[in-house]
Every structure is written in C-alpha cells, then in structure tokens.
Image (tube, rainbow, N blue to C red; front, side, top):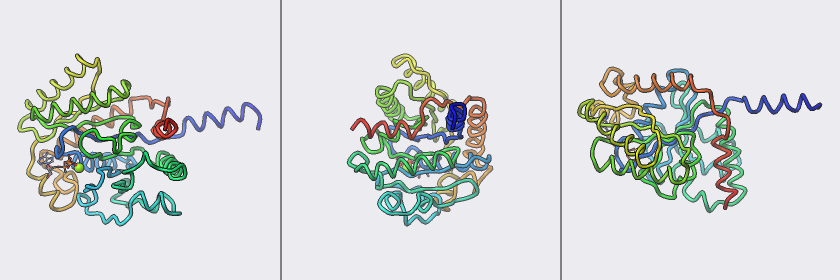
Length: 285
Ligand SMILES: Nc1ncnc2c1ncn2[C@@H]1O[C@H](COP(=O)(O)OP(=O)(O)OP(=O)(O)O)[C@@H](O)[C@H]1O
Ligand SMILES: [Mg+2]
C-alpha cells in the first residue's frame, strides 16, 4: 500500500458514520427518565434513525417492562460468553433495538482486561451499526455507570418543575461538569402543569449553570403532565405509539423534530468518540 492509499484508508475510517451516544440522567429519581428515553428513542427511530436503547439502571432496569419486550439476556451474557453482541440485542420495532445493561455493567471498574476488550469490541460494532446509542441511567451520580455518562457525547438531564428536583438536577450537572467541563448538556422539564412552569424551571437551571459554571446548556423544552403516560406504562407501549395525539406525545414529537433538525445541521464532531473515551477510563486504572 503506498502512502496516499494509507492516508485514504485513514480518512475513510475517520469519516465512517458513528453513533451519537446519549446518557439520560437525573438528580432525583422517578422524574421520567425511562419514559422519556423509550419515547425519545422510538420517535428518533420513526424518523429513520437506527437507535439502540440500553437500560443502565443497575439492578432496577425496567425498560423491557415499559417496552413489553422479553429480555432474558443482558450484556453480561455477551461479555462472559462467546457469542456476538448482536445476540443480546432485542428488536423492538423498525429501527429500534434494545439491550439490557442492567447489573451486567455493575462492576465495570473491577473487570479484567479480557472483559474490557470484549466490551470495547462490542461497543465499537454498535457505534458503527447505529445512529444513536441511548443509555437510560439510574438516578443520581453514583460510581456505577459514571464511565458511561462521562464517555457520552451528550448528557440529557431530566427534571420536574419541583424545586427539589431542580436542585438535584443542578447538583448532577455540576458533578459531571467538574469532571469534564466540555460535556454537552441538554435539559428537559417533565410533568409540567402548564408551559410557564417548564419555562421557569429551565430558565432557573440554565441561568445557574451559566452564572456559576460558565456553561451553556441546550434546552429541549417541557413535557406536560399527562394521564396517558401512565396508561401507556400499563399497556407496556411507548405513549407516542399508543396515544400519538395525547398532549405528551404531541409535545415530545415536536421536541424530537427540533432535536433531529439541529442534529442534521451540526457537522458531526469527529474529535473523539464514545468508545475511545470509554477505553480511556480503563487505561487510566
Ligand atoms: N409526563 C408525564 N405525565 C404523567 N406521568 C408521568 C410523566 N412522565 C412520567 N410519568 C410517570 O412517572 C413515573 C416514573 O417514570 P419513569 O419510570 O420514567 O421515571 P425514572 O426517572 O426512569 O425513574 P427511576 O429514577 O426510578 O429510574 C411513571 O409511573 C410514569 O407513569
Ligand atoms: Mg428509570
């Protein structure tokens, strides 16, 4: 291979499409992360994006229940077995797949080199096969899964309009920001009684981030309190699918539409990738 050809191969590798990794987090628990994650993922998939949703709520993962999907396999089966990563992926609908991380990624920092290598190999494959990898995380900032949050391209923070939830969302963002001041944040206020409530909460959070941490935060908007969300949980189907005309669905569709539009405009940043950052954590050990 001559030099020009080597360079061409390298350029091809750089330009290879790579999934955007998004971690969905909150300070306070029970604010709607999992419901947001599945509906956000499902709507991105409906727009033709290939989306992989990963349940990272250690020990309490409920995404498969919300999706009505049976998941007898989690990522541990891949890490400890001999099969391919694709074997532990469940197809939910066109363009949307699911993988249970659950307790499988619990002790990530205690892993041996072989398991880490297998995880990185698996994620490298996923990054090439999907447009979005969405991690539904547990609440709060614990050491569990922190590497994933810190490796994500974007962190979506969910809050409600309650002062306690706003405060905890701020603490969570500060915690992440202190570890990586470059991390991109997006904010969503869930369960608002009226649009004003959402605007006030988002404004309070973004101005605090700006004032105290000198950080700009992208505002996704607010989702209304909507009884159809609970009904869709009972029916184990995303609300955007089951009740597409409910207030929460209509709003979420608009949010995803705006999100996807902005995504198309952004020239995809190829500086450093999710898998590269994640393997950096292991190299530091
Ligand atoms: N917009 C909404 N309107 C009404 N109810 C909602 C809305 N969003 C979420 N809920 C309800 O809030 C509850 C918690 O939602 P969810 O499980 O998505 O939260 P979570 O942040 O993932 O919780 P955890 O921290 O335990 O993982 C669910 O019972 C759901 O029905
Ligand atoms: Mg959850």
